[in-house]
Length: 378
Image (tube, rainbow, N blue to C red; front, side, top):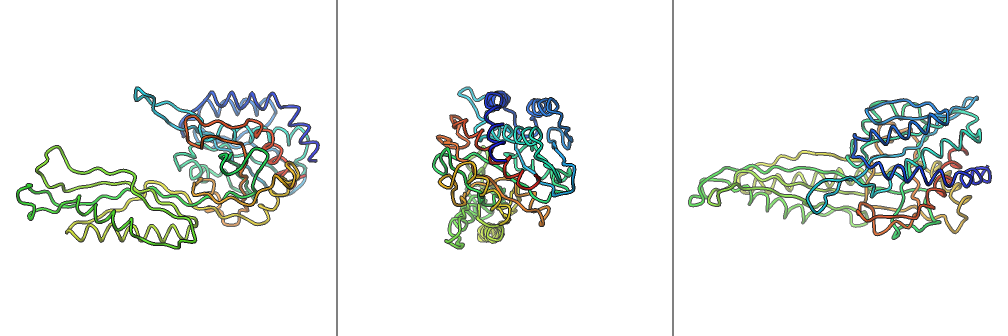
């Protein structure tokens, strides 16, 4: 089976690389991936694979076997990132590899169908929008993308610092991520009579000092930092009654995220109260930390070793980065998940407008994913 998949991938080498270059030339912001979705649907239609449209741009595609069996899925994200040029104009660019993931998702399904490897159960690829906006997976879950699945696999190319071309890990342990906005409210007053007001900037300063002073388990990865702040008005002699700041919270586990968020809320409330003000804490977006299934991870490890050899199989990688893939697990606790961390020599780093990677990884990734899924349904 491994040899047949490898031969098929190599036979389609030029077409796989063309798919990537075509998708790379269609960068679209999350929830706006109309051209990307249309392109992928057209290629699936050419292969005789039906799709199910679930959201404005999100959809799934399936190949079913003739016998009963497990339902196994692969999530492929599609969205690009926004950047600004020197003129301050916004443009979009695939600087996180989602074009690569969609390419691998498409060709994994096409090759499984062509080789007739889905003999029982079904294989479903979830083409997901808006991963970068932290809402894509939630929207797809709500639309039923993961309904009926027994297992779900994810994939992401890795920066060169984590994995080289020809290497891969069967689990990428993402941390949880929360973006929150805090509003400190005081009372305005004339600068000459500060005792009549409540300076919201003072409350924000104490809140931020508290955030920077909090502690959590140092054996686990976590961070809490202010990334944006705005307060005061046009006049310099008015005590400001409002300050708004944004927080980026990250934690290795979901339990630790709950602890960090609770401590941050307490720091904000205490800082504001110390000067006579109040604090409002609002979550703008969040994604959970990874929780994987040992059996699914082992299946992915076997596929990696078969394709890349024992020297190419890495230990699971822990990353402070996040991915909304894990919303599928949170929605269905019985779902078995694993996530391929694919070495691709990506430099200088993900989310860098100059990011590039070795496109040979598209071929190795497709081989690994096709083999891992085939192990379940062949």
